[in-house]
Structure formats: C-alpha cells, structure tokens
Image (tube, rainbow, N blue to C red; front, side, top):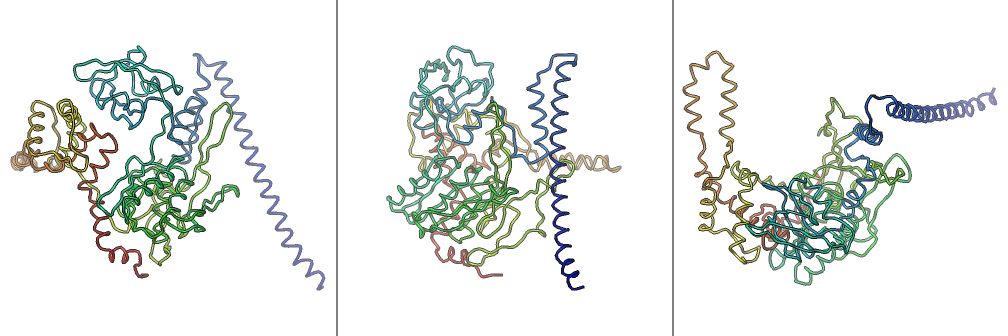
Length: 553
C-alpha cells in the first residue's frame, strides 16, 4: 500500500507534466499549421488574382498593402520596410544620408530652403532660408512635391548637383558637391549663465552619447558646475546611447534598463560600464509629452537614482523595444520584441496594445491600476504613464492671433524681408525685437489676410448653436447678437494685447536667418519658463536637495 501511494505521488505529477507537454506540443503544432495554411491561402489568392482579375494588378503593391494592414492590428511601432524605403529607414535610425545638408519644405508658391544645416554644403555654398528651389540639375521642380525634390538632391557622396534658386527678385545658380550628412544629436550647447551649462539633445542615433560627452567636457572647461539637459521633443532612438549618457552621471555597475520579452534572447540587462564623467554636478533634466523611448530611459534612470531633478510635463510613455529583422530581397520588418524596465522596476509604457483595443481605439492605464515603486532615496514613482516630472511646468499656450501669424507665413515672410535689408544682428542671446521694429511688423501686416477666431468668439458661437435648439431662442436672439458684437475681436488690439509673445516668436524667426538652427534654440531659451524654473532650483540648492530626498509617504 505504501509502495502504491509512493507510485501515485510520483506518477500523478509526471502524468500532469507529460499531459501539459503534449498540450504545449499540440498547441505549438496547431499554431505552426495555422501559419502554414494561411500563408498558402494568401499565396494562392495572389496567384489567382494575377491570373483571373479583369484588369492588370500590381502583385507587389497588393502584398505590401496586405502586410501593412496585418501589422496595423499590433502596435504603431511594428512596421514593414520594403526595399525602396530602406534608405529612408537607414537615415532615420542613423541620422546619416548623402546630400546637400538642408531642410526643405513647401511654402507659398513652391518649395524652399527652410534650414541649411551648419557646416554642410548648402550652408557653405551660401544657400539661405526662404530661397525658392526652381531647378535641380536642370529638372524643373516647380510642380514637384517636397519628397520628390529631396530625392533629387540626394545622391552618392562627392557627386555634383546644380541648383537654380530664386531669392527675392533674383535668380541664382549654385554648384554643390554632395557630402555624407550626419545630423547632430546635440544641435546646440552653451552657457545659460556663468555657472550653468545647457545641452539640447534632440535624438539618439549612434553618436548621441559622444556628442553629449564632448559638450559637457567643453562646458566644464568653461567653468560650469551645474547643467540643464534638455530632452524635450526628443523621440528617442538607440538604447545603448541612452545607457552611455546616463553613465556620464552615475557610477559604473549600475543597472540602467532591462528589456524583457517573450524570447530569452531579447531579455537583457543594460548596466553602466565606465567611470562617470561627473557624478557630482548639479543636474536638471527637461522633458515634455513628446519625450519618448530612449529619452524616457535617460530621464527615468536619473530620476530613479535621485541623480537629477526632472522638470516639465509627463513624457510620452513608450516602453516598447523594437528590433529590425531582414525578410529577404532587402525588405525588413521593425517589430516590437520586448518592454523595457528602468532601475526602480517600473515600465513606463502607457498603452497595452495587446488588450486595450476597443472599436479601433487604445486606452491608457487607469490610475487605479498603476503600481507604486521607489527611487533610491525612497521617493514614490509609478509605472504605466511615462515619466512624471518632479515639478510640473505648464505648457506654453499661444493666442489664436499668434498661431495665425505663424501658419499664414506672415512672421516667416517678415523675417525674410528683414534679412534682405539688415546684413547682421546681435548675438542670439542678445537680439530682441524693439518696439519700433514691432511697429514695422504691424505695418507689414496691413492688407495681408490673417483672420482667426478667438476663444471667446468660439464659446459664444457654441452657445448660440445650442440655444438655437431651444423654443425661446427668438426671444433672446437680440441679446445673443449683442454679445457677439461685444466679443468680436479686433486684430489691431490683439496685436498689442499679445505683443510680448508675438515679439518672442518673431525674434526667434529673425535670428534663424543669421544663426540657423543653433541660433533659434539659443534665442528660444530667453523667457522659457522651464529654464527659469531650472535656474531657480540652482540658485536655491536646498530646494533641489529637498526634492531629491523627499520623505517616504
């Protein structure tokens, strides 16, 4: 009897294990069979369409459309990259391409140069912002799209390209030599004041950490002992570069991020491996709702180790890792293979694409389901909603008139006209739009269309539409009409009411004509509320210490 009981104790678990194994094997086989069956059906369908469909079809296009539709059922980061898009994808991930080094775009009656990048052929040859592109190698591009013109400008390094441009009333000819263009991850760095450095990091391609390191070394040589690292609007990129940047500020041997997925080979722990460049410098990181992926790893890791104060707005919430795999014939697929977890253990992914789809919509994790984690000093942080700043900086909102002046190219056109008649201006940090210059701008606007709807007008219009459904509307229509007259805006008075913000936008646009992208960033720091808040932290060290060592709640 004892022997029988022993056999039962051994046999039942063994039987359960074997049964589970058989089910797993059967489940795997069922899935493989389903894949093989549907691939065969799909291939047969394409062949039959090609043979019997009444009109000629493009099988390659149909297959591509089918693949894209299939991937749309997953997440927005999993995508098919056909052979013809490989070069664009490589440029996106490496920041490199061969061309003239200029941003172009449609404005008014055609495409023009919007920004020549410093140190590259376009800028070296003297191309300016607002130069209209007429021809590229004798090809008339007046009716071509921005993408088509961009393709014409690109080509093998060290090959020539001839441009015909219109600048004002003049037509100019340029002969340029295409070069390998490596877009900077750090488009600007400098000093906010004698002791405060500033580094703008806009991307995470393969040279990001080296650029940040070089910028920090140069700023330290200029005597800074506190730093603002600006990750606002940074969409992310390579995880390795994020780890290296964190390593500039924390000791080696510290975990920065873990990737965890379905397969063992994608599970990896990324830790710092080098001696930090400066583990004592006072550090503030700026983020906003467009800071994502690798930018969130940097901000989140520095927050988890209580190494930096994070200021701004809640980040985007992308905690998914993508891997690019070859498919043959130079096609590729970029697919989500893991989630990443920062040092406290939290994942900052805001949307569960696997389970939250409902009527084609996705939903963020509700606050009630977010889990609590702790930083190194015991501060409370939560998962499921991006990186939340230690102190919120309200989003800068502009008046409708400001949006209209920008969208209508009025500020852009005035800055271009200004540059024609002013050979130089003061430095980006010093230049301001004076009151007399602002009056010139107001005169420039006379006769130009820039109408818009104010917030008050929209509110009254919404109220009127609602009241029209009421039986008593005719009785109060006169009062509604009177209210509409009272809130009716005056463009002239709005130009004075919102003078300060319009002058700031105008100043940045004018600075760009002389100092390009770097100058615009530097000029934009003036009056930036996030920079002002960061400065107040630095001038009150106890405030920073209190933030980084908040008591456990």
